[in-house]
Image 1 (cartoon, one colour):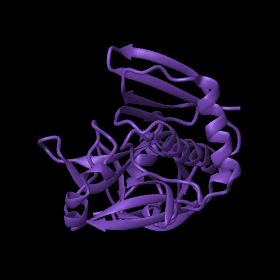
Image 2 (cartoon, rainbow, N blue to C red):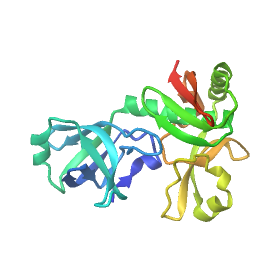
Image 3 (cartoon, rainbow, N blue to C red):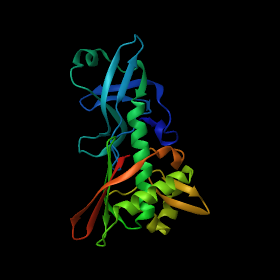
Length: 247
């Protein structure tokens, strides 16, 4: 099991950790600040710094899978190619410092929070999502056309309003009693602990957006900066794709 430090503090850039195992899936640590691919958000990259100063370049981060391909509680730090000799020297129990590529992560955080603002502006179910450092997109289950300029203006207004972004949780029972909180048709919130992580934008009395989400976010919408709608596409008779980019 890997302790997921990024769930409560997305601003942690590094942490001391201990190697649990090294295998085909990557390097598994007892704790990490690296976010694994999931919920539409790309996995983190960065480095693992060994006690002697050598660094293992991490190209991607993924959730570990068992022999049947089902996710487990471990997180695999996927090494970049060409580091076989260093990988062979790694052993369980070795201490490392896990350090993310912060500039890349912060772009992901800004885009991810932007997609939640977009959910407020377009109150329709989402049937597809991708969040990368270069762009973000949401696919809305709808038939009506969308206006690119209006959505860009709406995002800018919400960014300028400096709404707080709060990490919380909700019980499985409360989520079952409020199914409308789940806005994604393609990704269901992870369960198994009895509580589901949530993200609220705005205050409890006047939320801009409130939904289950496991991704990383900025602490205030003002931190998003300039984000614009670069493209709106009709992907099918019932799908409208909105693509975001940095201004």
